[in-house]
Image (cartoon, rainbow, N blue to C red; front, side, top):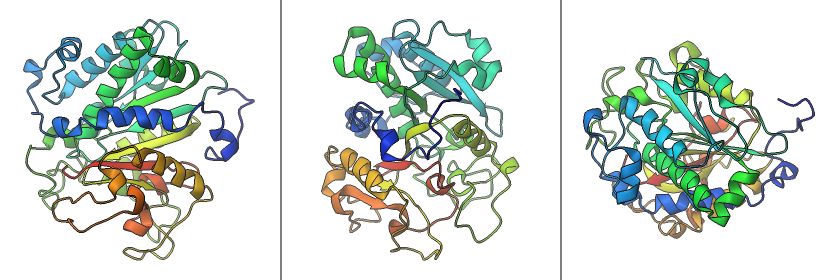
Length: 357
């Protein structure tokens, strides 16, 4: 990292002014989330029957999830849809069962990428150099293994960014010429592989390591981050190598905009997700940049055809409403150890993009 980088907390207004248009990436993501109903019903096909990503895109067919090696292959294909020097595929670490935690980096001017084998072995070193003055943005999906749509959406987003840059889409050219985008489609690949279509989270109470929601040691990744408001001992990071890898990656970078995609509702939730009082619900827990987070959450929600109504009518919570389609996390429900309360330095906006898991 360049020694002259601004060391202020990454969510200060001054830092956000580096972005050409903060809602631009969120609005682009929205274009893909609008097809989430189609993505929600795709089948988890065997890897041997997975369609090549390029031909899939050409035919406009998105009818299965990517398993195992197929996810890395789909991200490689997405990178290849752009011009040389636009993308780098690398792994930030491994899951409990040894599956790579793939990240696709997209920004103009990266130079020649390493080989696929080098990316697998070199880890973070394969990400390429930081580009001075270019704000970094990350989006993370599939933290709960059975919330699968975000995994697909981020692959589709990667493909749209790369191919759109190649074809000269002025919005995407401007975005990737000025912004450093990182997409992590699956933080919990082990849980994804255990998930079964139709479970919809109903197996969450099973024995440790059997539910798709958790990692292979029975840990909920989104309850396992160090928490500034914690009243007890946090889980050992040895139990959650996926969380450790994400924290190490975050600390090596300066992300100015972060999003974490989930299922289970249709709302943009902003920090903090818990409070010193730890009441079950109803306590508004502000960050020092509360107005910025509200602005970003509302910019997304106001452009989403369902979210903006504030009435998702999800099964089991038909009467649940959210003013303007947004909520403070702790005001919704107070939970320790979520990513957006890891510390005051690394908060993110949670985008719950579907009623189903």
